[in-house]
Image (cartoon, rainbow, N blue to C red):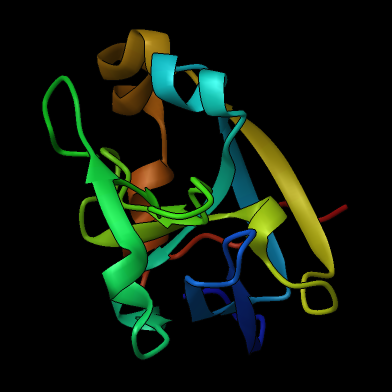
Length: 145
């Protein structure tokens, strides 16, 4: 696990029907993916172990999920405003990807952006370390500035 202290980040969708908290470092690695879904949505997210993520009470009733291809990724979004503030990525079915733009201001100190080649997923995934980000004991720290 990263030696950086964890903080609680809050966030959610545009209409605020879906709200959540996630425990993660102040500095995170976010993935810019070029797969058909992420590139169309413009989604950029950082991955955490699922155990560090919690939905606010009642938020689940406003969620719906879209899947395609292998149906491993669960693209979750608000039924009212359509915002995908988090989802379960194919690369980390044991984790949650948090949409950087949906984190409330004030707790993210630094975001390191990396590119994920979702259009060539198998080849990219085989040489990527993204699956480590949802493991408690192995979550890589962002590169030093």
